[in-house]
Every structure is written in structure tokens, then in C-alpha cells.
Length: 107
Image (tube, rainbow, N blue to C red; front, side, top):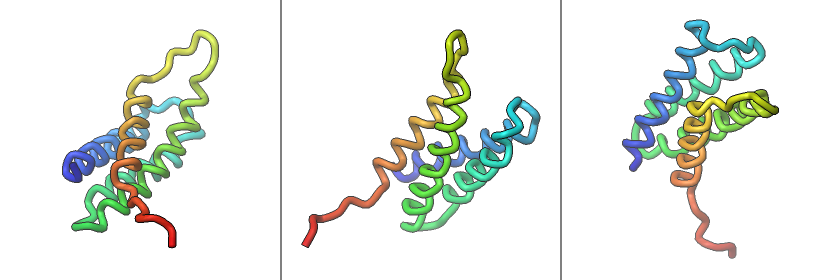
């Protein structure tokens, strides 16, 4: 599972950076946050060993926040929602839920 989440995190992060750098992204307000989120996802996917889960959880939480703000720009009558953005957010959320350490009860 970690390998699949690593791959998905790297692909979404790289795609995010690519969309910003190639001019696909139209809204200038999101350029820097998307670059940071995409870069963080790529770097987190490359972290070796058991530290990758923590890094990917953190990067996914950051990206989920950035993507959620971007999604709010789409909300409105007659505005189509970008399904790639929804898919990226779903992967971010799944990564957080699957990799976040679970507590073993409170003492």
C-alpha cells in the first residue's frame, strides 16, 4: 500500500508542478501555493523508509488544503468542477486516512 500511495503522491505532485510551470493554470493566485504543495508531495514520496508515511501525510494535508481553496473558486452556478482536482483531493484524503498513525488509547 505504501508503494502505491508513494506513486500516486509523486504523480499528483509532479502533475501539479507541471500544470503551474507550463502555463495551464489560469489563476495566478494559486501558482505559488500549488508549486509548494506539488513540490512537497514529490519530495515526500521520495523520503526513504518508514519516514515516508509521516512525510506523505504532512504533504497530503498541505495539498488537500491548497486544493480545497482552489476548489472553492469553482463553486458557483454554471461552473464545471475540475474532476482532476477532485481526484487529487481524494488521493490526498486517502493518504492521510491510511497513513496517519492511530492512537492505542489514552492513559
